[in-house]
Length: 341
Picture 1: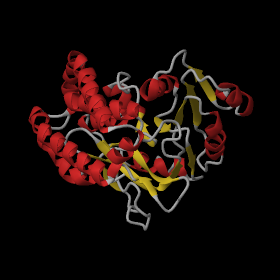
Picture 2: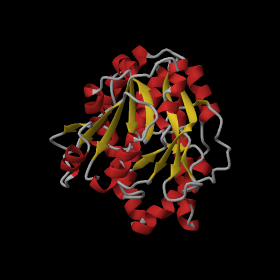
Picture 3: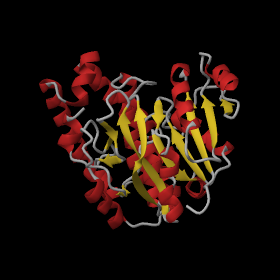
């Protein structure tokens, strides 16, 4: 690179005091210089803010008066950011010293690249992948590419992918100016899918950067298989479809969703997949109740989501054929989605 890019790293925090030192110290060791770090605190009740202000005077701290979730927290960071690129990083991470330098490379070299994805490894077993970007099922559910696979170099090629995980990713700020910010109605989960899909519809590419390495303590801030997560994921994936999918794929998604539910039910019986993990902490009847509430909550804001759809479609730069092609290239099958952890 001929010149260092202008980068703003945004970290959303909620009661993450125990996680922040390792995350911030690893940012302090970056080979890329001249970037800013913005910590957005979502009304923590621990001493997160005092800890950062006392120990990291170079970090800009934004205090939200309430918990605005992932999207609302990141939006506060975007509005304060001065960089050409907005980089979003979970607080439960440690980053390699060359992470930022490598992550910005594809965007600096190619103006059509709007998003860059990190290679995210499991913090506790660094030979295991957390994800190498995201794949998407035909009803709006996403899963990490390569999740829980042993890292044997199978994802060591820089290449175009669907969109990045919100755990550790780069966006051009121009995307938010063009298409709007994260959807704060989502609160938690799937908001990165929504933003990535909207960016794709806006004509932007995503590049996976295997040399931009992050170590992630999966669900250290939130529970991995909690009823709240199940509710929000199911509700929010419906909103993604309403906002972004062609109508023909929305109608077809009914079949794909029923297939997914069937396989998840099978997985619960056989002890396979995330569904079985959820049942261990709850019950099958509890799962049905969560589904019913997710659909009720989703369609309670149908009118709002339709208004958002109209704006997204007015800004789109790709046709339905290209949209379907993404799923052929970057889609995930029902069995892999339902029966793997």
